[in-house]
Image: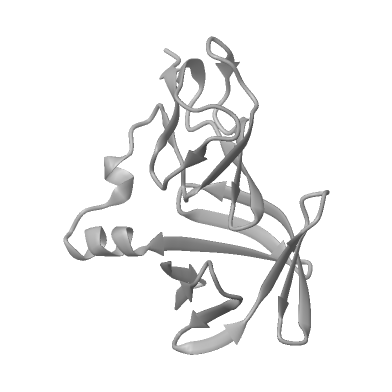
Length: 169
C-alpha cells in the first residue's frame, strides 16, 4: 500500500507491503516491526532502534500520536486520495457531516454506541483495528445514531460507511 505522510510541511512517500516486514520510505527500504501491547501502546522497531508510540488518535486523514514522548501530527493520504487531489478534487469536500467512514482498511473490534444513542462531536464511537493498531474513531457531529451499517468483527475497506448520525438541530 502506498501513502504520503506529511509532518511539519515535510512529505514522505511510504510504501508498506503487508506480506513483508519491510517498508520503503522516500525510496529507501527499511525493516520494521509493530508490537501492539494490551494497554494500546505500540512498540515500533526499525533495525536496532525501538520506539514507543502512545496516545494514537485518528480523525479522517490526520493521525496524532506521541513517539518516545514527542507529540507528532501527520496527514496521511493514500494513492486514491493523491490521485483525486491531482485531479482537483478534495476528499474533505466529498465527506458528509453525519457519516462516519473507515479512514483505512481494518476490522471493527468494538461498537461503543447503539442505534438511537445520543452522541457528542468527538465522542469515541468505534474501535477499528488497522495496521496492527487499535484506532478510536470519533463522532463527526453531535446528534443521534441513526444507522449502524457494520457489526463487531466485520472487515471494512477505506471510506466504507460505518455508521450514520442524524445531526442535532
